[in-house]
Image (cartoon, rainbow, N blue to C red; front, side, top):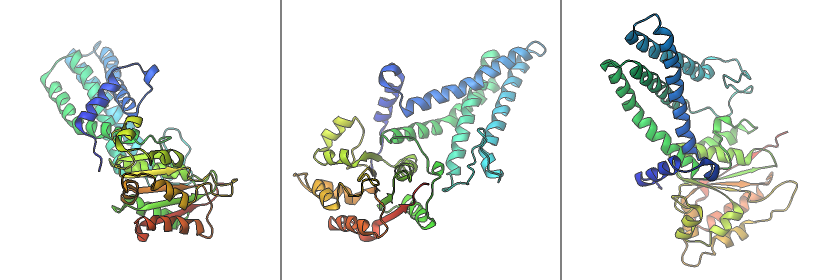
Length: 351
């Protein structure tokens, strides 16, 4: 398992706080920090404005405390509606305020994780509200409340910042959670996805399908769920992986600037192995792929890595007779992967 160390976290924080965004781009960790400062501001500014209105008729102490309570309660009501809406309302809607897809969820959201995120947001709103209240009029009870919120925020802040690091290191092509994936999939394949996602076994999952059926998006969303659980992952295309077969760990780390390589992570997503329709023939067959695996001359490091990893193979081919799957399965078993650890799904065309 590749764990992110405290030293690496500090290095990332330093990178997020120092430098110009116009030159370096914006990372997920930076975005998360900016988002939380936004939450603090959305608690602080309305509280201060409400305090100014109340202070005209009430004494300063009462006005400052009431303003913080009202703004905190308002955000609690809003976030409760935002979170519980999809659970309580059975009606499907296209509302921009409440996300419930017309067709329902293909894969259920991780409600516990969403609840934790909601509580984190609320804590930052409350921190902003009571910070403003304390600055408007100091009292010891308000200081105790503020310190309590700070203590409450220690674990969530650590968890979410680490989570964003686990999500940005794989270099996924986009952000997508499994519950957001809403294309067609057979019930048996849906169960296979859940089995792959929840199993502690290092399964290999082949995702077959025609063009625009959602192979890559499904694969990325599966890996994203595992990254959120702090599982180290790498996303790559087959062409890029071929070149990485030739490089040792030091070269790979130097080239990518990441904290782990494809060999020592836990989850590997290999995209664009073959183009699929309208190109009928496979540009890379299992024999060629195996040849690339075996090109590392020092030892069997590539074979050992493939056997150890949880791998998602994105295959741009329809496979009605399972011959392609059989060929790739034989390749994997020839390098030591157990047959029972090889799964497959075939996504229907998205018409």
